[in-house]
Length: 67
Image 1 (cartoon, rainbow, N blue to C red):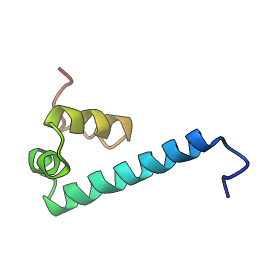
Image 2: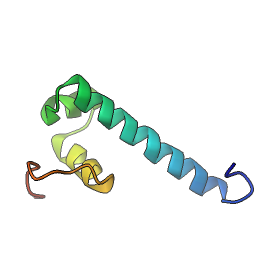
Image 3: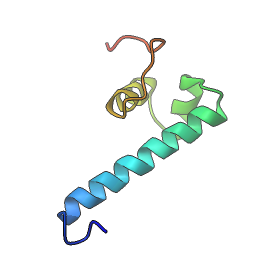
Image 4: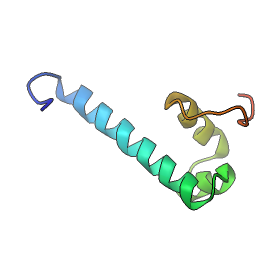
């Protein structure tokens, strides 16, 4: 439904963001919200995971402050 209404770059970016969010949610669920384990499962550093959590609005009060 987006084809023809948005540039391809925007559609691909939106789709990538959605898939990234779904993968993060799945990893957190599988690890029972253990962020260090979720980051390892996703092949990310913990810092990178925290950046992605912030970008997707998935941060709660328990996240460590940004370094």
